[in-house]
Length: 370
Image 1: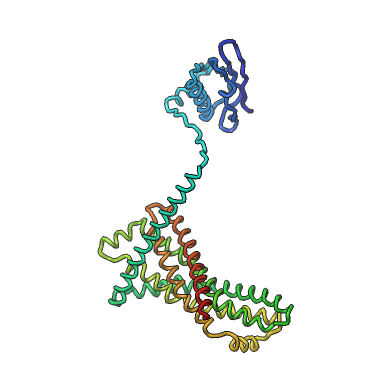
Image 2: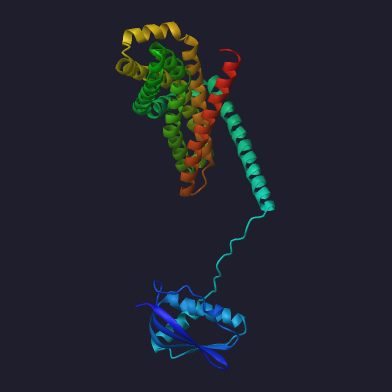
């Protein structure tokens, strides 16, 4: 049964007759005070069947708002149970007004842009401090090789790189297949079938294979590093490590970053091979170019510099993934929610800067004719 009311206007007052069940599911959205004039109000609960806390708060809010307008409110014919309910709620009642959504002015927009810019500058400043601490610790490890945690370095190569090989291989293979398939369709129209080798060889080895491999590793390892360091920070492992006199950079950051820097070229080489293999398969199926002919054309048309450029990019991409993910891990606050926030930021930031640096490489190398 629903709830409703009847308004009876008399000479000196307004009388509200309340009917039905006034609970959180039936509570009407209508506002009584919009229909009430300046006369005093009597609320008659004779026909009230049931009311819950939401209904009581509704009538208390109505009474509060009318009293603010100097209108007297009187409640009549409440049975003993409902009356005790009202008395109990009145002791702990606080009027909560709905928040008004204020429109932002042009000034507010400029203020928000300024605040965002300042926060971004602060983040960059913190990152450069972090970068300086990293190179300081790296120099210390180079001058004192015994301090380098070689076992941890090998572990992170296995965990972050070797375990990611299956998904990297699958992705690189599919990229080679898609690229070759699209090229085959276009080249077949002009009878330039053999040029599929040039297209796949240059685009895959120079651009796509390193970029795709870096993005896969960023999505997998950057999130892992940030989450691991974030948990260590929440559980005070890093604080305990520093208290005992151990440099957290030597134990946490250096092995992770150097593992990515040293192992990323291997990932890129494998991505090159697998993406070219995908191209060979499509060339055979779509253009009837066998593997021997494909490889012979590949040796003739593709300069080693294209492969070398992709391999040179790899350690730089690895460094970006490692340093940004570790930096975001150290940004984690003392809440579990911040782990998710900074893990997301870590993945987004690493992928963004990988694409930025790849674009810079492409433009710069093209300008110098390399």
